[in-house]
Length: 233
Length: 285
Image (tube, rainbow over all chains, first blue to last red; front, side, top):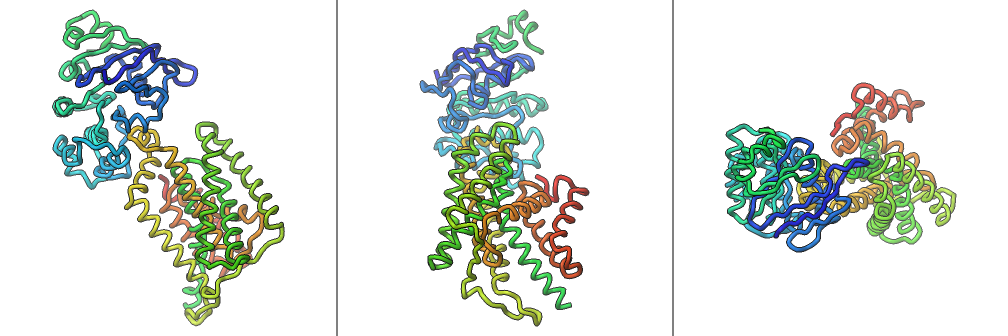
C-alpha cells in the first residue's frame, strides 16, 4: 500500500468538510475519487498533501506517517500535486516552472525536462513563454509536467478533466496511462465518470464529506442506482 | 543649461539613496506580504554599526560595511524567526503593532548603547571632496552613492532573474501555497528574504548616513520616505521602487531648484498625484 488515509476529518474555520474519510491506494494503481461539486474531494486531496492539515485521522505514505507534515516535506518524500486551478507560477517561464521543481525536491528519477516535453510536445514550443501567457489547457499540461519533474511515487490530480475539450481529454487520458506505465501511482479526483472509467482501476464515491461507495470502476459504472444518485453524467 | 544638468545629477544621487532604503522594504512585502515598519530601525542599526566599526574603532571602511550588514542581518533573523513568524496567519493589525513595537525597542536600545546624542559619521578620505562637473563642484560621495545604487539594481536583477534562489523567491511571492506543494521550504525562504531585506536596509544606513547624521529616531524619517517610494512604485514591485525612486529623487531636485522652501513637500505631492491617478502604484503586481 503506497497511501493509506484513516478517518480523516478536515474543515475550514467552524465548518467541517470531510467526516472520517478512509481510503487506500496500492502501488501502481490509478484510483479515482468521484462525486459532485462540494462533495469534499478537493479537501480530501488537500488533507493528504498537507495543504489543509486534517483535524484528526492519519495519513501514511510508503509506511511512514505524514499527517501534519508541511506540504514541502510531503512533496520531497515523493508526492506530486496538481491542483484543480493549475496554479502556474505566472512570472516564471514554462521551462523555469518545470526546472524549479527538480531544484527544490532534489529527487532523482526517470522524469526530466526532455521526457516531459515528449509527453506534452506543446510545452517544448512554449518553453520560453511566461506561465501567465498560456491557455487553460496548456497550463493544465504544464501543471502535470511540473508535478512529474519531482519524480513522484504518487501523483495526486484534482479535477484534471475539468474544462478540457474532448480532444484534450483524449490527450490527457493517454498521458495519464503513460505516466502509470512509467511506474507512478495516481490518485485522481474528478466529477466526470466517463473520463474516470477510461483511466481508473478503482473508485470511491463521495457525498457530503463521506465515502458512499468503493469498488472497481466497472462495477461502479454498471450500478445504475449509484451513478444516478451520486454522480452527474 | 549646465545648472539644469547639474541639478539632475543631484537628483540622481538622491534617487539612488531612496532606492537603497526602499528596495529591502518592497522585497519583504512582495514575498512575506508584511509591511515592515521596523525597516527604518534596521537602517538605523546598520548606520550605528558602521559608525562604530569605522568611525570609532577605525577598522577598514569596507570591512565595517560588511560587518554592519552581517550584524543587522542577524537582528533581522531573530525578528523573523522569533516574532514575525507567529503572526503571518492573523489580522494585519498585529503586523503594525509588532513592527511598531520594534521601532520603540530598537530606538531605546540604541540610546542605551550609543547614547542619545547624535553622531556625525566620517566620510572615508577616498570618497571625500568634490570634483568639477559642468563647472560646479559635485561631491565624490554622491557619485559613489549613484554607483552603489546602480550596482545594487543590477545585482538584484541578476539575483532574481538568473539564480535559482531568486526564481524560488519569485515563485513563493506569486503563490506561496503552491510553492510549498512543489517542495519549496517556504518558512526558510521567508527567513532568507527577511534577512536579505534587513541587510539592504543596513546598506542604506551604513552608506546613507555619512552625509546625514546618526541618531536615535532616524529610522522614523527613513521609513516614511521608503514607504512613500514603495507605494508610488506599487507595493512589492522592485522595478516599481527603482522607477519611483528616480521620479521622486529627480523631480524633488528640480522642485527645490525653483521653489526652495517646499523641499520636503515634493515627495508628498508626487505620492498624492500617483495615488489619485493609479491607487495601486505605477507597477502594481
